[in-house]
Image (cartoon, rainbow, N blue to C red; front, side):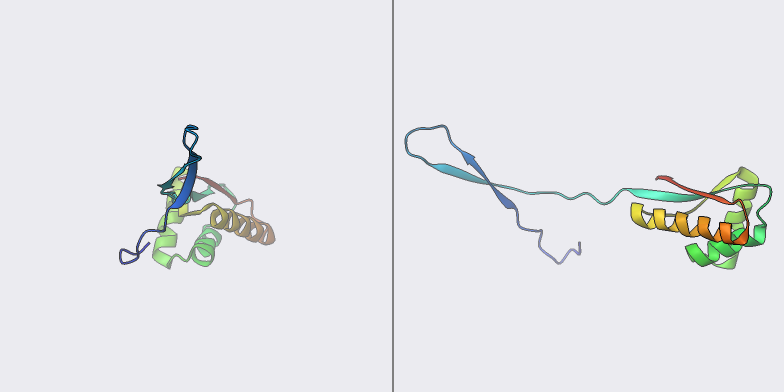
Length: 118
């Protein structure tokens, strides 16, 4: 939320007072705080069959990485067995995983892509 906007109005909470015969009601304001969404990292796993060029293409096409960054991530996957492609909200991460897996299937590659809590 930008700093120049006021905070959202608090919602009133009605709590009856102990019955003193007057029937009075006290209204208190509670501020509801929202938390940012949980983030998930999309991870590519190494295998011995998927060409490095295909992994670089996936990183460029689905994760908007430039050639140099995509190559560095691909080498990390190759040497360490896994590499983080990006960190996203749950829905975006799940969509990216499905897109990568579908592209790998179309290309006939066993590339695995997962998401995990960041």
